[in-house]
Image (tube, rainbow, N blue to C red):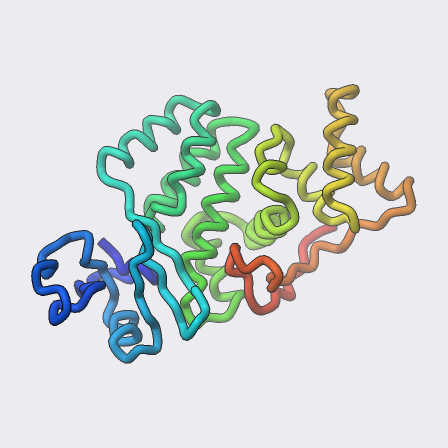
Length: 253
C-alpha cells in the first residue's frame, strides 16, 4: 500500500490517534494510515495535522484543508467496481462515486478501462484526472510538474488534462451528467456565459441530432460572442477542486 498522501512506496505506519492517547487502538486498522517518511515527518513536526472526520481522514496545513481521504475500497468493493466497468455505460454513475477512494494505480486502471466504454466514458476519465489532481495537491511541486506527472501516468496529452480541469471548473455536477460530447462542454466553457450556451446546445441537439461543437462555435460567433483561447489557469475560486497557482500552457484553438 503506498503513502495515502503522495503515493510513494514503502510507507511507514502512522497512528491517527497516538498510541499514548489510545493504547487500545494500537493494532486497530481503522486508526492506522500509511505515510511515507517525508509526509510522516510533516505530521509529527506539526507542519500538517491529520484528523479523523467521520469515515474520512483530513489533512490540514494550519487551518487550510489540503486533502480529504475517504476510506479506501475493500477488495470486494474494488471487484464490484471493475465488474461495473465491464457492464458498460449504465455503471458509469456508480463508478464515479468510487473514484475518490482509489489509489493512483487504481485510478489509472479505471481510466484505461473507461476509454472503451462509449460516449459518456469521457466523464469518468475526467473525474479520474480531477481526483488525481486533488491527490497531488499537498505536494510542493509546480503546477506544470503535477500536470507532467499525470500526463505520464495516465498516458494523456497535457492539453487534454487542461481541458478536463476547465470543464470541471465551469459546470456543476448535474450539468456534467448530461449526455453530451466533451467538445460541446469545452466549447461552452470557453464562452462568457457557459451555462447559457450549454443549455442552448442541448436545445439545438433536441431539434438537430447532428448538431456539433463546430456548429456551437459558429453560433457563438454569429451572436457576437467570443471564445476564450485555451490558455489555462488554475482557478483559485474552485477550492473544492484544489486548484491553485497558474498555468500558462496554451492549446490549439
